[in-house]
Length: 287
Image 1 (cartoon, rainbow, N blue to C red):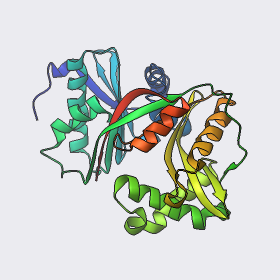
Image 2 (tube, rainbow, N blue to C red; image 1 turned 120 degrees about the vertical axis):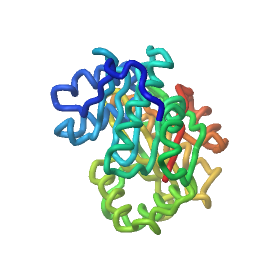
Image 3 (spheres, rainbow, N blue to C red; image 1 turned 45 degrees about the vertical axis):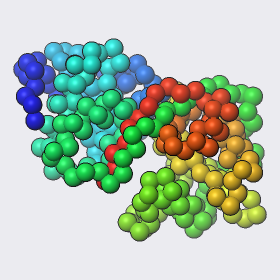
Image 4 (cartoon, rainbow, N blue to C red; image 1 turned 60 degrees about the vertical axis):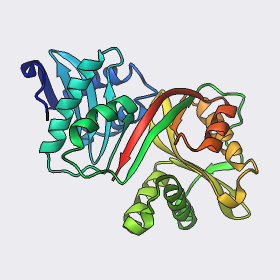
């Protein structure tokens, strides 16, 4: 790895409770792009539990990152590219010296590129690469209905919800989570249900469309796992799901964000027809 420029000017530290306020202020410069990291900081009782770090140049925060097995980065949008690039070097050094595997890197594309060029010779190649995942947002759609046909999932739905979530993951990522860790995956879905972060549209006693909240902040909700059963596509169930979910969240004063694979043209066409606007692009490396 190349040496860092003017190393003594750089610092990296794990976030403590005393740092949480300044980290949130930094992330809220771009509250829709950084919705996941903001959510992590707000939900954990102690900042140390988030496994988040901040990188500073002199006294200025340049980058905040979650360094759990899934790595997520946020940079100062006003920072010069060479400054952000140097901050990625600091993060890469921390990743390579810790005793924790990497399962995914999902962040704005330029940050993933900057980090990966410093890691690729030291880590195995990712199993799945998603080069371009447009990020979309929609705000204030009070003209959309509140929840009517769509409802929050309950534990009674788990036996049909878990296979639906697994089917979506297999279709989108190419990895079947039920083959990798069926009990662990079911428990993660149960946790979403318990937190009221799973919504479903049923028809004829089966789940025909669903989505989950991957992050919730006072400003926004990030959706994940938006999916329609292939047997029920092009019948309006996915559109109705999103209209009701976005209308429901608009009434709570929240914007809605999501990101999608760029090759999923039908999904992109649906989002744009509903009024979602592109606000950025992610890149994903998955092991």
